[in-house]
Length: 323
Image (cartoon, rainbow, N blue to C red; front, top):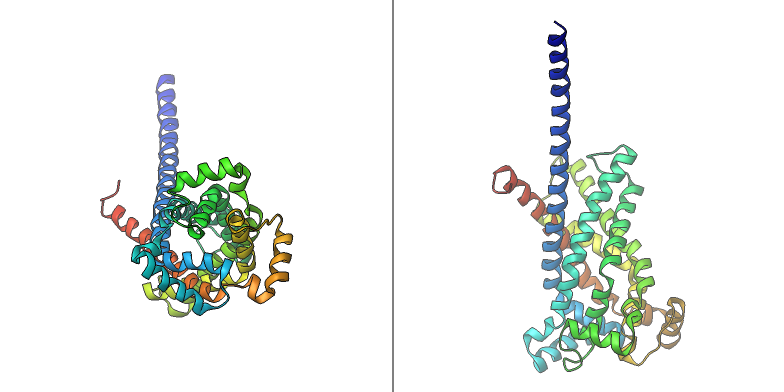
């Protein structure tokens, strides 16, 4: 009889432990799949968006350094096309992809994880976060991605403002900058980047998530149509990039100082020199009109592509095509 009781207790204990272990394992697999889906969707979103606006992006970088009017930027695109051919407008795009794919993957994945963590902390797990945590999640995601991929952004900026003969490929840029200017140069402009990404990423994600929330409340549809996602993303890009634009100009000037003949040292010093030479509007906001064309398009495509890729992956999983 004693042995029978012991067997019953043993079987009960075993029966209690097994579901817990199984549940824990299932939850772990679910989170892993969520992370991998976010990384892949973010990578696709970044690649599609940046490729779509690569000619405007390259022109914007040059525009910040040389030009004073929007029409001059479009003339530059046309002259580049006539002189070097159509695909020259995508010069530096390989470096952009090397940076953007990991950057976007990390940023979108980090945003999803920060939303989950903050949702659990504030008691909003599985629902839209309140305004402050919503803004915080976007800012933290931007900081995380920028810190991990900054040298690649520096390389892209250099390739965009120099002739083809100066740098042959991405590795050549790294080697030449390290040899001639020192490794510290790869992180020149890092501080304004960190300061700029807080309002940029924070406001971009905040605006997009807020517009989707308001849309669901007023339309009764849980998911917006694709063109609505594009519009929400465009608004997010417009607000985010306008708020952080002066710091973006400072960052680019500091990154390209080694090849433009300037010696920018600190953020404030760079700002003062730009304002004294060119004025506030023509200096710190140079190229903003170009950004209002490029930014909303890029961010709209990025957010939309991420969401649609996530939906596609979930459907493929439900249909059994993805393990």
